[in-house]
Length: 117
Image 1 (tube, rainbow, N blue to C red):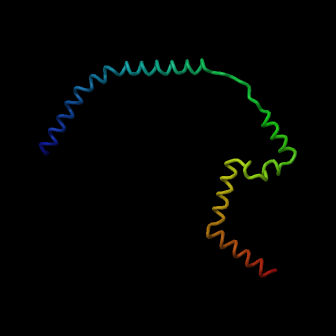
Image 2 (image 1 turned 45 degrees about the horizontal axis):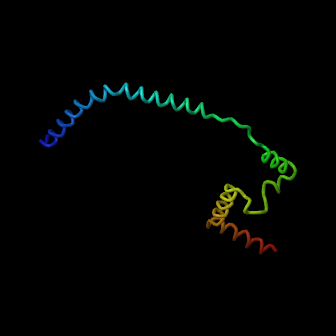
């Protein structure tokens, strides 16, 4: 074994021998402090609980529109009014449809439609 490795290993053992008792003595105190912090946090959360009724008027109005005319309520004509998720799905649909596999498929379908017409 190399002399440097022996010195480093000995130093590590000595450091561990001196640090372990200090860590062991402080462990219950740290545990108690953490328990106290969690207890205070729970009490604070309970104290600041503000209950308020939910306003369902916009949801009820939209539900009535959906019941009256599903297609126009779900697919609005105005693109600015569409939700972020609808726009994201539309962008994904366009990106997938522009892949080479689907372009070739579309081209073949167009060519066969022209031949039959």
